[in-house]
Image (cartoon, rainbow, N blue to C red; front, side):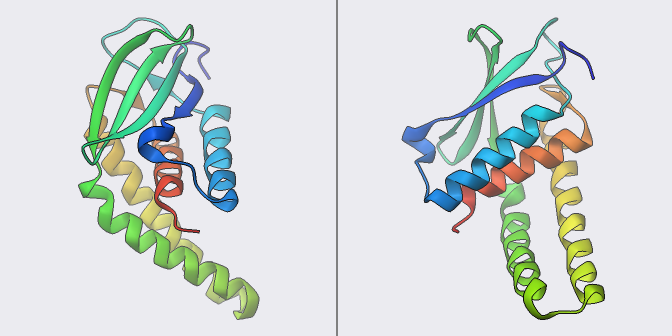
Length: 157
């Protein structure tokens, strides 16, 4: 993993994204930790890194303010969440089914639900990579982790 083409920090704008319940805050923290722990993130128009991202909601779009490691803003990209809306809703339903199944279902049933969850996760990652192409270079696994964070920002708990 490159020391320069990576994220070393993710912050959330409390004014636009708000604070959540303790469970929501816990899920957000886990998603951020996982994203920072292992990622590939680069800006095609900038030579350098590592980077930090500040996420905010601006006019129903997710604003990615990319900063250098010192905190200087480099660029802001606005991402419409509309293409992810259906996936977020479907993902929420599958996650609810998965957590319910853990208590009563057979291992085969749990695995089938989990395969559906992973499929939705993969679909969302492809959309994120496509929507950010030319703006942010990220691999599929990083895009999957970003979707996890986006989902955690919407999660009702």
